[in-house]
Image 1 (spheres, rainbow, N blue to C red):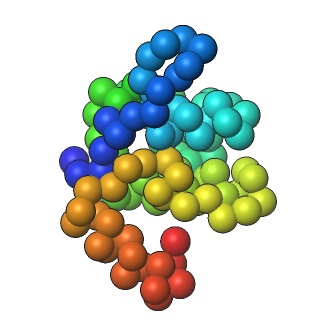
Image 2: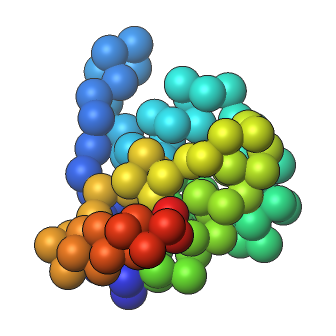
Length: 102
């Protein structure tokens, strides 16, 4: 596992339950999970497990989802918009940003 937490959860006031950052992003921006899965090459079943916080994404999956979301929205979507990063992932991510890679 990549160590990034999908378990860092926001609270869904309507349903009264916690949601992952990925799920909150999909809801807020109106992104269809099936379209994101297809565009990123991540299976719908795997994406569903990530959305539910049942598993943590690998770094490869985090990047694939951020790139797909960026292409779908015609704006840069950063990994931190989709996932809460561990300390080691955060340090690596900051280094990539300094190099101009999201």
